[in-house]
Amino acid sequence: MKKKLRDFIFQELIFVAEPGQFSDDDDLLEAGLDSMGIMRLIMFIENEYGVTLPDTEIEPSNVQSLNALEQWILRHKKG
Amino acid sequence: MSISKEDILEKLNPADSFTLAMDEEIRKDGLAGNFGCFALRLSKAPDIAMLEQRINEFCQRFPVALSSLQQIGKRHYWCKRDNPPPVFFLHHCPENKLEADFQQQTIDTIINHKQAREFAAPIEFHLLTGVTQHIFFIRWMHVFGDARSADLILKYLCTTDEVQRQQFGLPVTPPLVDVQLGKYRWWQKINLLWKGKRYIDQLDSLESIQPFHSGLAPQRMNYSIQKLSVAQTNQVLKLAKEQVGLTGTSLYYIGCLMRALEIMHPNSDGAAYCVPYAFNLRKQRAMAPMTGNHICALFAQAPRAVVQDRKALFAHLKQQNANVIRQQMDYAFLPLMWAGSWLSLAEYGKTLRLSYGSGKERSSFWFSDVGRMDVPSDSFPGATITDLFYACQVTTPPGLAFLSCIYQNQLTLSYNFAEPTSNVEQMAQLHQVVLAQLLGEPE
Image (cartoon, rainbow over all chains, first blue to last red; front, side, top):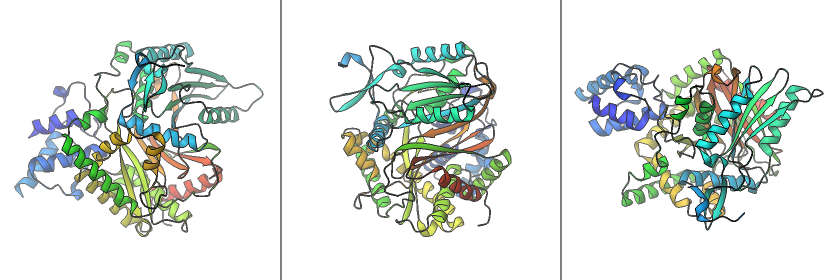
């Protein structure tokens, strides 16, 4: 899952010189993930994983890193 | 000047053509054209030789900066010139003039300078110096680039290391509008085109409110810059997050201006506020493409009754934005821009501006948010950047463009307006109401 998220984020949303050096805990918001990017990312996740991520849960703690994103998706996949 | 196909440097992409149609519309109003501007206040006179060297280097690497916009057949192209235009200008305040007056008058002259489109330089750099006040001013034709282009060019000029400067503009890619359009098969493009058309038709079912409709012909552009303190900026960002969520800072600014206009002009005609805004197709922090427009457009629309209820307004704008992205309306404007680029400028301008049916102006005001500007304050050649603002031209109606950026944790709002349609006093009053809305103060 993280590989797909990583590919989408670095191919479509944020430029980082060396994506391989970007760890799963590094801060995506610091790296430039903006409001439009977050919306696109959510749409990608919903289409890709068949989950619905509630607007009320769009918070920094859920989108801050690849690990946080994965946890957020898994919580809804289980539910 | 006779032009042949061998002189073509670049053709316009569909988003460039979109801004060209707006250039034509602004020129039809009798104003200078569709220009954007960045102004940097500097701590002292900069290192002029170094600045000039970087500007020259930039123009050599990106020769479209010295080109001429020419029409060949029905289309427009950036073409080589026999004699490159001057792009760097020095303006020094005479001893007998107040520096603040000199700067204001000089910027006013630069912004309002009228020139045939094919003679105008795609980008100009002006350095205004005095004894104590210094401004570096960039004016660019919107057809040449969007605000992110100007931001990248500014960063290029502020990059000391030559090897790092070489990284700007890399990797070389086709226009991102074309890249995005290329992801769709032909039937998907047609599907998107109709989606876009239905989206616009739906917007047009409500007549747009025109707060500054006075019937007076515009004579010149003016601007009013308002900088918020760090504490005010933090308060605005906190409220934006609370009320519109992590995905909606720009929507918060738009909503606050809608509400301020409604408070100040409750009797203006129309049923809803309708505001176009662009989103950039470049990846965040990308250093390419340097020039050209890589944008697509969206609209924020809110009926008058919704605007009157603050909580309902932000919930509405947030939901509208989410729906638009969920339904992929955000990319639906791309094939419309592609199709529009084949129209004459007059037809395209009319299509972009006027509602189907009523034939009235669709936009209540223009909006652009460049977000956080992260050019380091100590990176300018030989001086420190103390302040920064952003300005642009706009058609009349709507006669108002509302721009925002954050620099050094301070939100700067730029009200760009056509005189005599509106005036400085009106903008000062408007800002007071906008500020109260941004800070969530009780009415």
